[in-house]
Image (cartoon, rainbow, N blue to C red; front, top):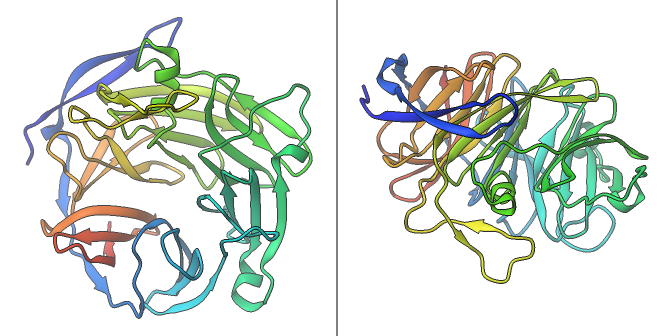
Amino acid sequence: MLSTLLLFACKKEGDKKVEFRTLPFCSVVSDTLEIDSVRMNTFFSNPTSLFVIDDSLLLVFDDDRNDKLCHFIHTKGCVVKSFGERGRKRGEFIFPQGLSLSGDKKTCCVYDYNMQYNVCFSVKEALDGDNPVQDVIRMKDVESEQPVKHRFYQVMALANNRFIGFGNHPENRVQIFNKSKILATYSDFPILDEKEENNRSIWGNLACFGVSPDNKHIVITTGIGAAFEILSLSGEKISHKLEKGFYAPKYSIAQGAVPVCVVVCSETVLGFNALHVANDCFYAVLAGPEERYNEILQFDFDGECVHRYCLPSDIAYINCMTVEEGKLWAFVENKAGEIKLIKARI
């Protein structure tokens, strides 16, 4: 049982400036998970997104392989089919920003930061066909009443052929759009740093983004320092619900970067990674000064940490994870540097 005191933050009325207070973390219920390793017939070096398709099939995104980017994996460990290529042809990628899966599991999409387009793949065609590219949405073709910046850190699929993009532009932090037009934008930022540009960068660079499958909650976590914000989503209306912070951000500024980009330094406390958002809660890893990379925290949508799940001590890092029907799937790295697929009841 950890006795470390963490910090959390609350919102002041009239603004969203974060104030830090102590929280006795040892009061949170904890369990040690019994895990099973899945023997793979291939190797992954940078898996960043993981989804359950059905009882026997997973979908993983790895942008550090020489062949394809997206891979269907049988739950017994063999790669079934791969798709998504680098290049400049229609539906190919130069700087892909992760994979998302729609709530009905029929469509997955990958956003390219360099090309500024969102490629939609049919899951059925990706498994059974030769041309899984369903659509390519170029952000310059998406109509808006006023000119807006479209460079996103990540884009995710929503219901009814809509998408949600996450950036850090002061007028367009979160954007909901379809193929033809912008449907909604959200531009507020909780204040973790008094310098406005730096604050926006903290909520973008090394941040994680997630949307619940029922499209009712949005969660954004920071990786420099540790904080999260929960937004409510009702149709196309985005509203702030709450934010909490655990560690104040300490950082350096990337030289020559325009706009300002915060980066880690020797004093940085690393925050959240491996975010997974479910319908009733969300899961994330909070490294912190103790570097607890093998511990998963479960939060409810009131911002309370309700459970801690500890993985075996030989696990040094959790790359990505998903939880469905009481089962955890995750790509993890052990202390020997090996990346493995694991599963556990949670």
